Image (tube, rainbow, N blue to C red; front, side, top):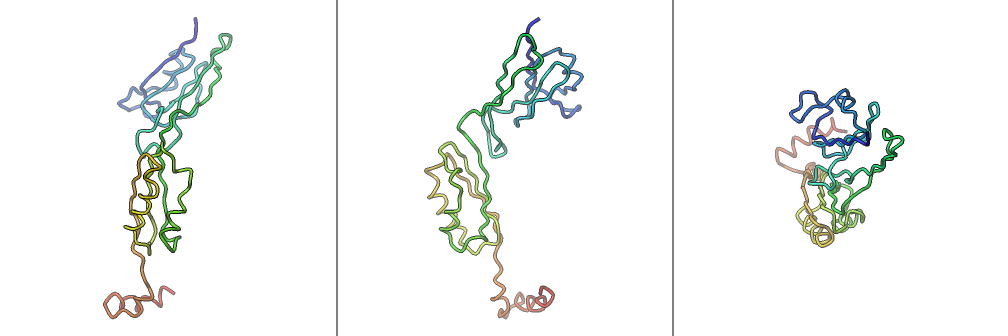
Length: 193
């Protein structure tokens, strides 16, 4: 009698896993009221099989930029008369967050506008911020990186900037270019239009 709770570092998604594979039948045979599963750091929905509810509660706080989802734990309250249907509520924990933000440099004519476009909710002392610069940039990416870093480094826990921009092609210059690149562009231009 009583409420039975199980804790397992198991994999319910892959029967060939090295991490104690567990099927719905295995869960049912445990005769537990709640099973907290481990191994997967992302929180899952609460599932049920028979009289048992189970889930992956996830990590209490994120460990790296691969874990940008909300972290916390499940609070459960059991009624001794109906232990198979506990009250379950997710409660977010911790103040550490990992945020990945893409900044399309094509959208801005100057560096200041690009920096000012960063959402204010990303700038928090508990945030580890990764900004990925994308697009065919006409901006000086080195200056942009320096300005972003100086603008936000004292407002976040950590800042990483990844340059994934492409070189912007100046078609007007190519049209008058005397090199092979210009000649090639003039030959292709009618097909591009």
